[in-house]
Length: 125
Length: 210
Picture (cartoon, each protein chain N blue to C red):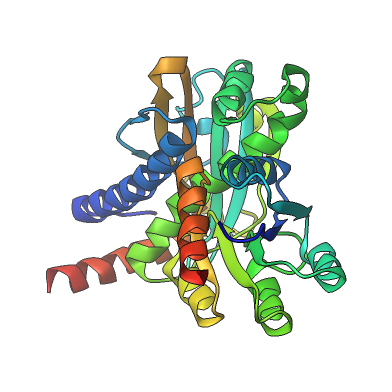
């Protein structure tokens, strides 16, 4: 098993953060999972410490997830950035891909979240 | 006056079917059980309160509203009876949460469900038509059914037109039998948007049938 990872969840929904955090923790109990409610807070946190993963909602007050994701990709190119969103429009998926972000369609489920991180971890190894 | 041919009406119903079907799949994933849907009904009314879907106008409901804006605009609503909403939240939380924090999470949970369901619906319609649709942030309210939408009138409508319907209401009911939870999704669009949607459906049909 690889070393414990750090994840920053960025979502204005407390409910969404609660579920995703629980799903990650149940499969990867040693990982550090931090939370931010909007882009500004996420930026501040990302400047304070490095994160292996950024999981970012699209529709948030302030900067949206694509804008934040684009900034994070530039500032922290070694991090993996994924858009986790209910907005399943092809246009949004294409924009995420163009920015080098992964795309995960909400709703988050245990299987979906585990599958995403397991595949990513295998790709890293 | 809004004039839809049988084929156009059928196509709009089918578009909504695709959207709501995707939404039901998302809800089903969240609650881990089958979600049943009714066939979408389309009605044209002059005021929201004229819509005959409001069988119980004084019933208190929990509602999540999202406005959408793109080639056509309007409001999408996810509505369910207030008395069952905690039960739905309990079903949605697949992780253990102390009971006393359940009601704290109620609004958050229902907003996120609304966000997921309405986006699934609008997103798949956008994908079929090939046009992006922007969605606003979800807004949560508890209110009586009759107050779900304001009863605005068309300000600049000429007198002769004031009796003409100018709202299109699409209504689809969903049921979670295991938990005796039901609710519905509404799309409310004004006359201009219906005309645009009609043109897009015509183009879509022309393309699909060519």
